[in-house]
Amino acid sequence: MKKISKIIGILLIVVVASFAGFLGFMSLTDYRPEPIEHLKVDGQGIVLSKSDTFDFITWNIGYCGLGKEQDFFFDGGRNVRPEKKLQERYLNGVLDQLSEMKGIDFILLQEVDRRSKRSYYTDQVPLIAEKLPNYALAFTYNYKTSFIPQPLTQPYGRAEGGLLTLSRYQPSSSHRHALAPDASWPTGLFMLKRCFMTFRYMLQDGKELVVVNQHLSAYDDGTVKQQQMDTLKRFLLNEYNKGNYIVVGGDWNQFPPDYKPILSGRDGVKGMNVEADYPAVGWKWAYDLSAPTNRKLNKPYREDQTETVVIDYFLLSPNITLMDVKVWDIHFEYSDHQPVYLKLVF
Image (cartoon, rainbow, N blue to C red; front, side):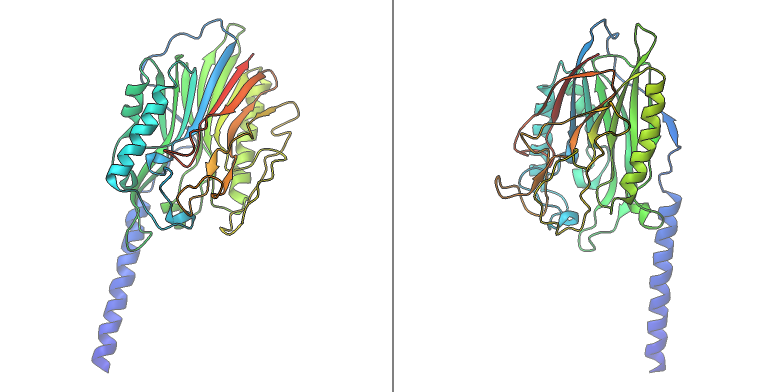
């Protein structure tokens, strides 16, 4: 009995030491971005013209791994990633859709992968850039972790992805602005480091156009999202008080004002609506309720059966007039999100 107890004790020490070592490694390699970081802009856009009418697309491409045949373990499904051939079909489908967006002034993408196990370590940024020549572009991480141990039988592994903004016009600058992370240590070692990114353009009246690409938290009780919204609010009001024009697009992981989808609520994620007068009276939410922008991933997509919602849309400062907003309905063929088109005028 003493021998067995000794063996068990040694095994426990090995397990605890291994776990502590793993946490130590993850802490040392943890992605720690600064509150504000300057981003390198690649490609070459044209000089912003006298035109006062512009169009936008926002699209969470789901790292080209969440097309209609897929479910996802973290959303109640079973799959960790699609088979390689299926992932390639999703990737090529996303690239084909982006090719059809040539001529759109601004394209805001979320969940673009660079070196992730879930997308077979494909760097998607140069592939997208190739499909959209003559666009200026910048990328920033909001997910960068060396190893995710879930699920134990098929670990998620390395995850590196983030936001990609492309524009026909050459920005004067681009920056990453940190938001509240999804979780604190040690869980935060394996979760997203949320942010928004900006493109800035000087206008003839001496003011600036500020284009914001963002992706807010998904799996929380609303506390983290509220912190992120508060940070974004301070930024937006500060820019508008300078007389600037601001367009915010992306995946809000919140519903538009007064939108009430019918949901089962089985996943325990708190459904929230953005405030109608966020960040202040006069700002305009631009969304389309004629088609959903996001679908639930507990099962493969089935039209009229899968739960769907609207969480992808735009926010415009009061000095901008909304002309059109429309969901680009491709029936979730290549991603669990759908593109949203916007047209506006100063």
